[in-house]
Image 1 (tube, one colour):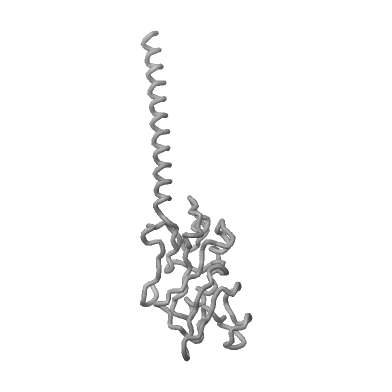
Image 2 (cartoon, helix red, strand yellow):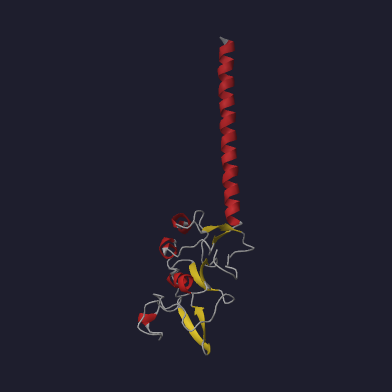
Length: 187
């Protein structure tokens, strides 16, 4: 009987050790995940973005931490910018019924004939991507969506990334917080 009792004690001791090991590895894994989240930022890959509009509605913040940014190096400074103007409009005047942006976040400034510069008023931008879609379809793709890290709360699991149909949102290095399109053709 003492030998059988000893083996039961041994089995229980081994089980307690295994539970302790499993708990320790779980805690270490959670700490590693937390460390990785602190050492990375959420990014939007503009070449995978489908401008679905979910950035505006899925973010835990209102308005969204996602904003439209303008890459001036890619811009053609067109008089007829389809990021700014709707493709079906009554004329080429910047009246509300002719504009793409629902919040009037895009500003157009005359440079010289026939060139205009587009600027984004980020405080008004809701991250809907309507202007980006217009620029992608008819323009040179100089408007793009980016997660602004001064607004982003750095959720452990980004709600926008979870809902993104193009899987364009991922964690990246804080040394390169924004992924931008490069000059050249479409991917």
